[in-house]
Length: 400
Image (cartoon, rainbow, N blue to C red; front, side, top):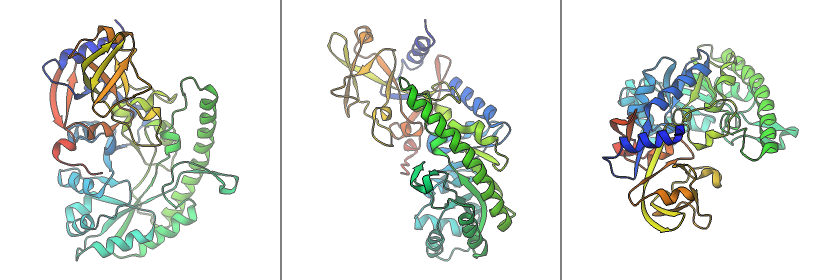
């Protein structure tokens, strides 16, 4: 029996008493992935990206491990909820225009001490001040650096369109303005290199593209390491009390951790290891988060139909954004239909061994987005469900 066939047998036994659709997290794989992230970080703390987990129980499990410290959140409402729930170090990784949230933050000493907000434009400070509603708490601020690689005088750009702050001088100017402004305290810098951490460099069947990606990433790493160090020097000259410099992502942990200017690493997707992380040479993880859909029809030879399954991931539309049939091995989508809103036909020889009520296990393309589809995650150890915990959705929250 192959390792994947063994996993399928375990998952089927563990969830036999449950009705599908359902979602699981294999805790043995989850914990092994967490340990590997810590190893790759080389002693630097990892700030846990909550959007890649979206389950409070699993956030708590990871943060109880040595090597993890703090949360990187994705909305202000989520940040405040986590802080009220006892998480005392929450970095909001994206700018917000949530006026009610800012009013709450500025009025509560506990929240203001626990939550750091992200800016890359002084207009965002104006919005926060206008939203204070009388609240006088000092708001902790982090600046985001644009990590994109610019070539040919800026005519070619590689990387996400995030912050407008690219040069050391630009970041230092904003840092100076924050430091002079009453009601705010500059505490950190964040730089997420998505074109390095979030792009696979070993694309199956595309050797030339893979080599091009590796060349681009090597160039981008060198350029960013030099520029990030210069940015940190410029900002520390303005704000010597800077508490942290955050960088990285699951796909670049060890490279970013090697930079002396970086004090902590941001990562999260490497805990679940969704299908987009199959195409990396920098690390190999174990798929930990899966969902099962029941077989409801057998339309013919080599075909079964499962209930649901149309859970595409965010990003540029393409086949790599679709969930992948994982267990049993050898199933594929009908190219005329793909994964459907209510039903999904699957083709392949293994279909003939599946009966009505059997399960097909899928991997989502991305990590935490799976939790927007399910109220609970069944946590598996060995061949048993040892706990069932709510996702954000199961706790009544859809933050974005």
